[in-house]
Image (cartoon, rainbow, N blue to C red; front, side, top):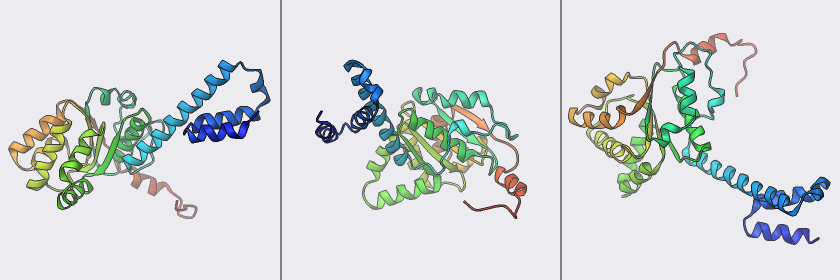
Length: 253
């Protein structure tokens, strides 16, 4: 059998998953006992799996999540007010399909960024396009885009993301330009896409943080009314873990 030419043609056609599957079948004597239909079905399944994995890696790279986190590793043992049933529902990603929002608020160190990245990673696994930015970096990139004449293009890219994660929201009051940019972002995404916000500030303080009353009303109306709210509590998990480590055995990773 012309094994090598077939592999070359599969790779030329960019059917890399089928090529790997074909090579594996040739190395497994038990594959000879399968019918042509069964062997072809296995090759097609391998190609589909290979493409899905490749697309997921691209989505994860594009998302630029700050942490390597997944919903299966969320710690529910720590006393921080985390509702496991709610997190399991959110992990199903129906809230993204329905274009709802998620607001994660609570003290620093309670794991808000980890939860946001875990939900973002699950969204990538389920086929959604995700963009993660810390709020200061987001506004900095917007200003840079303005200076380079690609402001509208940058906002359009944000609008297309199935899930936009804005981490560390509310570290500083917004200026007028940031308020107007944020309104544009929220207006584009309202009812059409989902947004996840993490913040140390309680939601009731967001109006004051945004500043301008009219713009704050417009932004929060598009962000809060269809949002799943998660209020974290407790002391910093980072601080608690630091105090329980043995300084003689601790190693840096």
